[in-house]
Image (cartoon, rainbow over all chains, first blue to last red; front, side):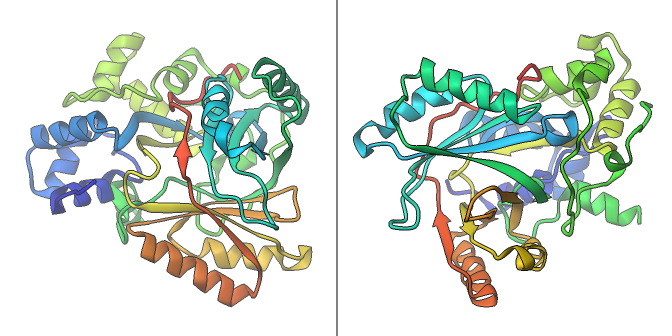
Length: 173
Length: 178
């Protein structure tokens, strides 16, 4: 995906969030020196190209009471990883499902998914359900529950971009 | 503006953030109807019109200022990280999931070192021999590699670099009934 300078500047400005103000796109437009309609058109294009997969409220699970967060890693035969990945990705409470490389002998797992729930018991019960429903009995897996969160925020895709939210916070002291 | 009734809710995210697991009960059931609707129904499809918050307010039978105040309060309480884009992994910039096995007594200092990188957006302790898991995102794979090399050199610990190769989940946001 090749972005022009304005596209990169736009991403740098919005990656930490849109302004919580009546005319958020106008505020971004002013910072970029382009028109409000161009900001909106560019965002529509980024959504259309699926570079942005969704635009909206990004919730923080733990603060909402979803304190059990399990990364489940599976050792799936290479020839069925795509099919099993797609099956896993369809479950409601699976929030991510990625294929990643094995790092043998240290790390044999090639499929990762994330399951959030209000407590461990519920996450474990949901996982058991998923294993049954998706026919994953016999596939080796491990559940890595989270213990401490040291950091969580949106990713920064453009190096050095602080974003309108951060700039505003700094400006407000 | 909703009451903040838990000390941990008021903390803004920061690069040196270290939080214990929150241990109270069902927060979702304590939310107002407006809060629930904003949290559940607007994780995607944010209006691309000049006054998006006014549009949401119309849909929810509230005023624009109520919607803005509610979102602001949810953000202050940490329940909303941001109102904005979620980028598709692997489409913009470069990123990887990395894991290291850190001796328990070194965990706080190693976590702090890793948090110090602006390129690190997630950093969690997990129950495994590889006990520290973090995501590195940057404008290029070269910069991601540099960050990993620096962390390897600074810690002397074995590091797994696990970049995404395929994704199977269509991200529609997180339903609050899970």
